[in-house]
Image (cartoon, rainbow, N blue to C red; front, side):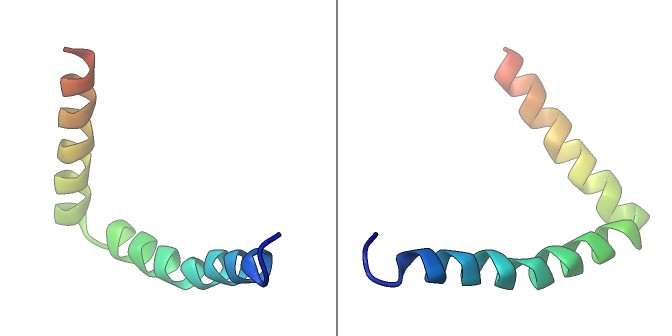
Length: 50
């Protein structure tokens, strides 16, 4: 592999855990955010099927 690429990738994945945990907590604690996010995803699925 190229130098420390594997280690850097592993570190990036581990660092992303905290960000994902924060996003999940915000989503689960906000019905308004849930509704907006669900709407965005639904619209994306409808557009893909068109």
